[in-house]
Length: 552
Image: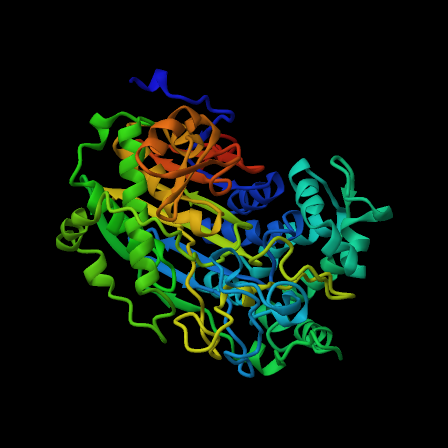
């Protein structure tokens, strides 16, 4: 099979430039980052501007009261991972929720959905702390400039996309139950229509406070006080979060995890993220096979991917989590010797579906690069679609529902402990060749994130795909016995069923991946896939030659 024979056609086009590239999952998010590059900012400035603007135009996916991870490669070659994941509050405990079932599909569910919807579902947010930390430490522009595009989008309004409209439909009932959410997202009782204008006046004022006060506006200031007062309202669903929890929160700078694959160096975030460890592990296993010879999309290739992903998930479940609370054997899992031991597990499919962690698939991702060599791959969220599905009056802030990611039972590896971060599948990855950046990528999609990132890496390195092809290519995902295939892989359903897998066709596996590739001549190419409103903006050209108008 040649690349011309691939079982899919790309729906979007890439864009290239030498002065910088910004790729996000919404047009105004990309425009915000592009604006920062145009006024002299770097990739870190552009990333924070994009993410803040996405809190406006992707309110269902990300917010200042959420959490996430940014993976930065600085122009000097250093890799820094900024961990802004949410944590459990100081008054939270392992028995604060009542589980309703031990069945795999309902394992994380609790009585009255208290860990999913409403004030008690909200964990200590980290996004704003993380964004302010990285911009202050590694950015170039005044922070006020970086916030301005988000304020403009909120105050002037933006056009509702079909994508946003569809997400409002998905949670129509929960959004209707909250007066502020209903007013914003359901004007007249119906989901905001595609093409209509959504104005977030109250949130614009909150962003102006952030513009002048930075993270302190939320982590101890007026926005934080409003949030805590709203969450602690009387009632059975009241939160136990405190203003001191917000004040005490700190984003953490961590060291990236590095692996190698067929001459490339692959860098990803460390625990509590799973991707750095288990993408490295799975690539180490694949390195023992001639993947290119198997042909992309063949039954043999898909079966191997399914087995390798299954093994990665088995080990993730055996030892993963916040390194302050759980011992994760990073060196063992990422070693080539361990990968050879894993070969003995291939083909030994369990007939019992695994009880997977219930991370939300509703997230956003940003990939940015500048002319100086700074690169950022960042994945951030409010966890579930529209977070806790409530909006704080007079601030327009939508808080996270990260408490849904903790095991609601005491005595478990993922049980609630004050200050604890839960494992995440976020995979902001950066690949190098001969010490130079080759490509950076990431995507939303919960537990489907890092297996999807793995497949994109394999698409580029083994199958020789272009960046656009790699991010748009069909995907598979498995928990072990159960395998999901995207529609383009439907012809392989019978073959995998014959191998003993329970195969289901899925509309999508994971969310909107976006990426940037780097050429030897200094050109950068951005790509975004069909699974979200992904938009690429690239800059070329530049300033006039000195002396064109005046003698110098």
